[in-house]
Image (cartoon, rainbow, N blue to C red; front, side):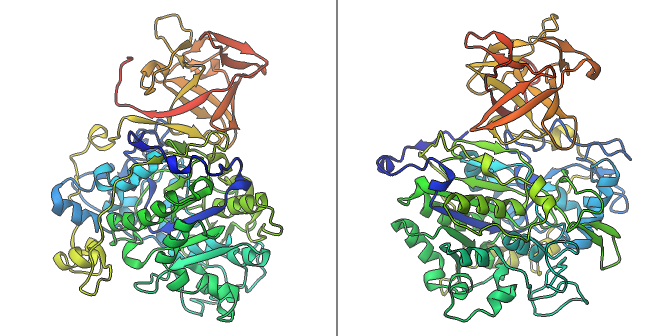
Length: 640
């Protein structure tokens, strides 16, 4: 949790938003090419390297941490996650900031996913199909701003790219809700199916990667509904990462039209300086798309440290502006960029319309379009302040569904897109549960100040890659010239799967992958491990660190709210009444339901609720008493 909080006294008299409809500004920033565990595997209180539910590969019997090295090296049989900056110092920092991973396009990503799904949901081909360095990760010292931002607000640890491919398919999905999968809502010959990068008005093959796209981007839907929206982008070092340039309606828009002026213009009223000025005077549009320049977009070899400078400009302007109380910022990544992650998303059933199709490349057969690899999502707002982990299944469709909810709450009509298929709507989160509108926190965290990126002689930002790495290690990507020290044959789970001690408040419907503490009325469910084979309630602690109060949930189905619950002390299951069972056959099935605003109830099979009364005694009643749940990661192995 953030220890440095400065109350924002200047906003004490400002209007406080009380619902989603009272929010005035939603700001979206999409960066490039980073997986969740590559950044946040060591982060406290999330589904990272402490994951107690990691999938086991059915072919090898090993957890998904173990990546096969068959045909890669004879020095080891498997590769575990490893720290990229083991060299340390300034040179080690700079080199690893500029590192690249491997392939992130359609065919290799599909190959990794299909192999993992076949073997129990535990992919083990990242090092073979991609590169060994794809399994590398950073720590807090490499990402100080990213870590501080995540622990100050909300971090989603079950968020995925929309498509098992690279930039354009994912960005265009983020901005429209589709890549034109056959059988989806789009009519034939609309421009899809888009499976790889394509930025010219042509097809890569008949019916494949065809530009322009003839279905509406969500910005067009907003424009037609009268929503005040804007794309903010600078022409210098433009990274071609706004999908709006590839939709027919925008290509055909007159220069003086709203679509062109809001979506395609550069600089001036559409530049970063204009965004900062509008944030300062409280005149930001209702919806803003932010597009970083190339050197600041985080796409390897461009660096996290330079991207953090840009992100800080966006966040600081909004947070220190007069409308911070009514602002939400959504920061995500388009896809994983070849950096690996062990957790596969839920996949639609074979044959689902708008999701499954025959691979037009003829390489991976009849397959699914996504979701893709797990990636970070930060949710920044007074309504997510304080350090929480959002646990719902989500992908880029979630951003559009959130905008629909937001604009509907604002009173707009006709803001629901027809481009999202039914399966995504039914199975991906709309993100609303990430917010607690009843208990906002308007304090402002003290975040580290990222350094100004390197500039050329003309004052243009060129960043660490062009200003240092490319000079020291020439090549199109520093990864082609510099490869980190990969610890073949030197790894154990203990020296590889490292993570910080800490905790995050849980929000959203519950999913697997975390050590949990269930707290109510100042007490927590506890396994006293005293031979009585009974669980009880014991006084909770401020840091939620007590091993006896740590539990793991085991989902009975891939989706749903039914779980068995085991103790971190001895693996015993919560059973009938207040008993503990050695076997799953004696386990109680708990329906753990999210009520919103960080509150959960635990319902037994007979309909009663397991409650903790104000005096710290357990109660089994038809009337629930809510819990708060904390996701914790502690390296202690004994009760305290």
